[in-house]
Length: 249
Image 1 (cartoon, rainbow, N blue to C red):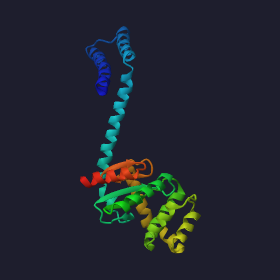
Image 2 (cartoon, one colour):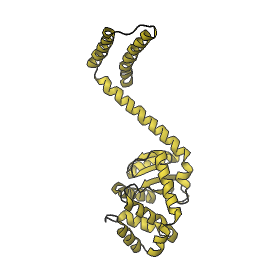
Image 3 (tube, helix red, strand yellow):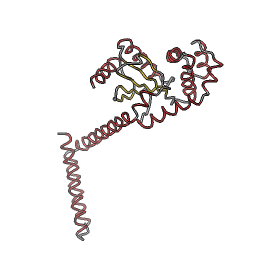
């Protein structure tokens, strides 16, 4: 009913506009009185049915959201290998899990820290889930520094330890704090700083930003479960439902 009534309102406008256009094509210049008559009809209709304006806007918004969902789903399918199989992206959970979750996150993002707890609960509850971390440092230079440190920590076999420590700390993440947390996590700091400058780290982050643009990701956290995109944080129950849907596909 909502869409039907919205169409009626739009239809009135279209019909009247087409009438003007046809008159113009036939050599009849629509005069001021005729234009005024048309405007009066439209105005009277909208005054009698003001709700159709909101309904039309809601329908337009719904269509736009559906268009974005379709566009993003197409982008996920087109970039699925890069999303799920990039060897530079750290993996948690079961490396052979049948369901893959991809998380875009920033170490300075408070919502990402909360999401980390829900994801850990999911991995503990479901041994068939594979979690791929995509560092997306969008909150400034300290975020970039933390992301570089975490990716470089893989070369010392310490990514998990540093990742969990960075997510757990309540201190504002400055470069000094990142290095302190890295030291507490058992990393060789001189080696870490050298390996943070490795071009492969920059290339991994560049690929993540390319995916951000391709998928039109506007903030963190952002999740992909199977082929479904979830903007923002998701509760444990929501994650379980998404995993169940992905597993059923």
